[in-house]
Image 1 (cartoon, helix red, strand yellow):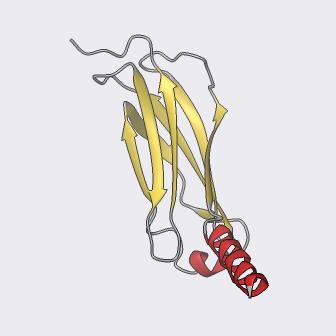
Image 2: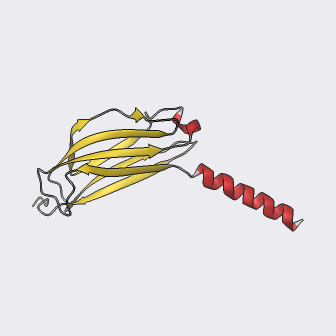
Image 3: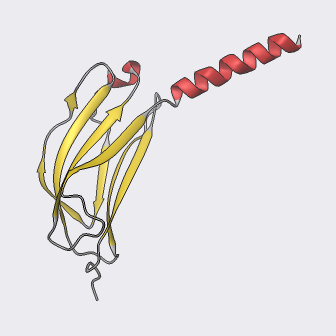
Length: 128
């Protein structure tokens, strides 16, 4: 009986781990620095990996929020294969009330969600 319960528990755990196997990575591809200044530009690439059954809905449900950043150039989502999507952006650092700028990418759906955030330190970003 214990073996049966253990088997069901392990199977359930494997299904939960598989269902959570979603990933979003925000990478800087050009203009990377330790500390940025207002006016600096940075090119980024967002890579998202989702199971194919979630990808069937496309990337329309992906939300992107910027703080202390303006979009200078953006490309649409490109489907690389059955589960991988990529989007390229060129962003400009602008003034805000904090000493950092952020890009947040997320998607919340019944079939699967992901969240990724990248913070950039900005040394002269404070508005008085």
